[in-house]
Image (cartoon, rainbow, N blue to C red):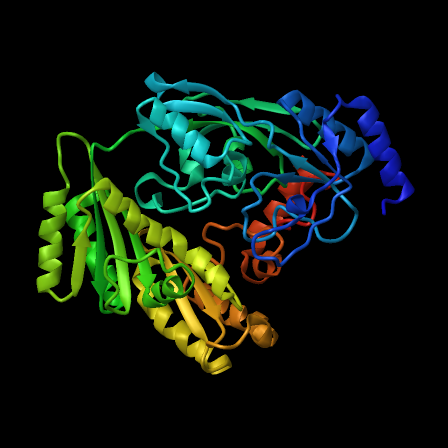
Length: 468
């Protein structure tokens, strides 16, 4: 039930907006994938262009009404839902999904924030190019959300995070002014880079409405391998050898614990790894242009690694379909984990040289809190990003161990902090990790962040309660 002031604001907004711009909130607007937060909304606004976004933000600024931007709703830290405090207006970018321009000569594309990652990838492919950001949720996650959270994914090793793929941003600031920054320049040294300030800010400094993004030539040759290894130390040694031999042709290097395959066998039995003997696995991919076939180089380095005992078995994909099936295994592991039900999930990054040490030490700390918990670790070993998730013993529910959830996360994050890592590698802070940011964040950085927030959003209307 809205209070009279909120109801009066919505009446004024509806009277000044084109028909159909506002609608009641639906359950899907107020949920997040892990079920940790249940959002609230006075209404959902669905603008069709940047001018309508600007008008909405000006009205909200005048009335001091909070605005929660909503993309695909796939974020895992609660940045897209506001569970408490004054009821906000949810601003959905679902209608703003046009690919405004594909520019092959510039190797660039201009796309609106509501387009899904899969739609952008298809537009790039139609032009004979590739947009390399790759996420399991690419069919539903949106470009605005990818940029607002600085999404990572499986191709960071070669192409970088979302911020590395962005040339320019169009955004609406907290006063309703529009930042027109959609140039496709590779060099533009004209003062503060507001594009990079907005990327990763999770909608707290501005509403991203469109972006110009980098495209790349499609690799002519791709070789994909699924490898069994004895331990993470072997995986790190293998990465070093592959990097030295193959250089930047090495585009992906994913570490997978056997636990994830066990989850797949139980909950998604049609999704099977090409081999499952062993405690640890690596999915490696090498890509090159038409004048260099990487398969021979990959086979050579893997033969040396086999002789050295770094790998115990391996499969090289013989077709695009086989490669896609291997990638399907990796991409399905998070979904199998959700079906299994985690007690606590962590998205961390560490210096590569300390990953094996972290995995050993973290296991001991977890066992010291409660025996019998199941650990499933997987992630982007090439860029140091691990998803370290903890599950109840077979037969137990996650709720039976909820009493130690905070202690488990504190143990994991304390260890990450001790090893000069980050407690959020690619998921962001949202609302779930605010206390962690206060606990582990550099005081000078946090003070600067608060000052920037106060300068750009003095009324605090943009995604209130997220990040800070």
